[in-house]
Length: 236
Image 1 (cartoon, rainbow, N blue to C red):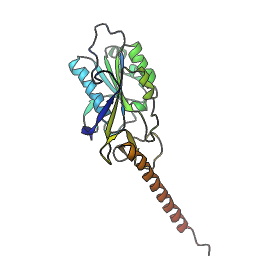
Image 2: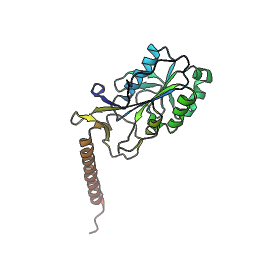
Image 3: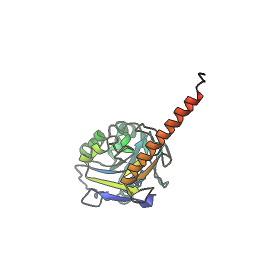
Image 4: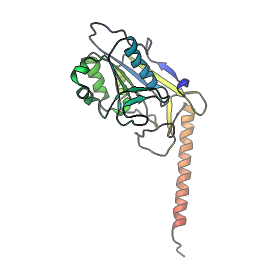
């Protein structure tokens, strides 16, 4: 599925390129990568972080939410299995203290994966880029399975130097997929899972898929009611 992605760039330049390091960098940069599940957001994030580390001789670090333990606890892992060591944290505000003041001061680029799970994302980006003059690259879901704003990712867009909207491929027709469809009856917003629970879909199949899911719920509900009625003792 990784090979099927495309992207909608909201920038006026190459979004994958982080500007060459200046010997007197006065301000940092904020780059945002958004899209549905299976769009390759983590892959795009790793590509930028590795590029900065390998070709720019910069000190980099990766952070992800400690809520995401799907593939590894201490690594960012793509759906294709590519890995990069990371700090798994519940809150971004704790990173500087845990990483160490001296080590933090030497950092040039910070990557944040699964950014929708960090409530303090906006303040962290402001501090890292505006106050500390570092580059931060954020990747996360812009919307949940109901197509509502998810977490604080969209709040960071006004801070951003670049914004890249990635798309996946609809599992039902192969067209560009902008949305994430949940295949289960669970209704809580934060449900961390993979292809067993979610799939990327186009606009048409998001709408029809929701109808199918609702119909299934109605059928299951009817069966449950019938089963419960049959289990009642006879009143005759």
